[in-house]
Image (cartoon, rainbow, N blue to C red; front, side, top):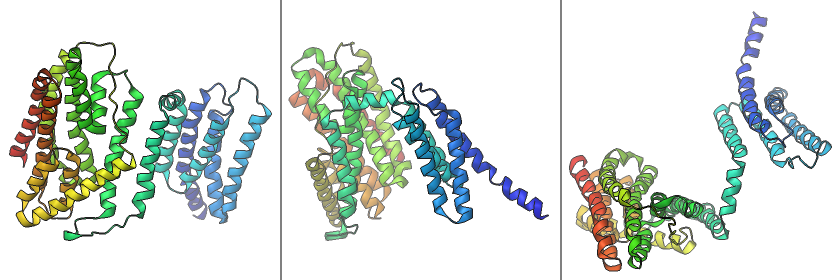
Length: 421
């Protein structure tokens, strides 16, 4: 009976070693394809198994030095192998050495029960190894301004955000410095993704992606840039229409993403309203896209870096002011006060009123229907503002063509409000 019990315990270890073996084979398969790499399938599979074995022995012996010693052995042996057999046609080996060390660590991670995490990290490691050329291409296309943008976003997220107090302050307890800056980080992050993608794409992929990423950065800025360009070039009008309409539809996608992070409980009621505007607006946009003649060159708009400290601080200030006035007017005039704020603030920035409404909803100060109505009014006010911008700055032809898609979006949102809210 004792022997059978011991055998059962030993067999219980097999799934961990089998998982480690699979992880090692996955990473080793990618390295096997590299002609300059000395380690391949067998090496990585053995290293992963060794990681699990070392973790098991370390736990049984209650000595972490066994696990650490195994890591040092793997690292030194791999480096020594590269130096011993190195030639001019072989890669430096730094990447493969790092991959072997990671593989050992993943094998140990499996033993400690974090199997899902180990598998995810193994897949990420393999992806990073496989897409070497693409990753190098990205770094070559990025200039100093793009790297500064990423660093500035890191400052906003990991330096400024953690030091802010996470408590309600001021009249009506409406201002929470941590929550305000968290919204700054959220909007800056979404905008940064579009900004970097726009910089990387350049002039290669046409109006659809320019409008999409331009909308993620700033739909108002994109509208303004292409409105001005079309004023001085008649042949540019059709292209400007498509980019402007797509950029403004992207606002709805951006708001859905933001809402899913800030207040996921409201999504079942909010998505049909945003979806109605997206569906009707998309129909008109597709029509104008089909009318667009092919052009050899598509200019990229120069849009301001969305993660600059001044830009982020300005948005944070706007958000805090809108949050205060929304709480104040809601207190003295009910939902009608919030709607007034939505119509006014939505003209220039729909993100602020959206985040404000979601924040008040999460605090229990607004009903779901009031929140969705305020967001919708902000979007509609933003559409009217942009149409006015196009009419006064651009040409009559551009305004006539843009009005179809933008009003279709507003009608879709209005129908969604009537039906679903």
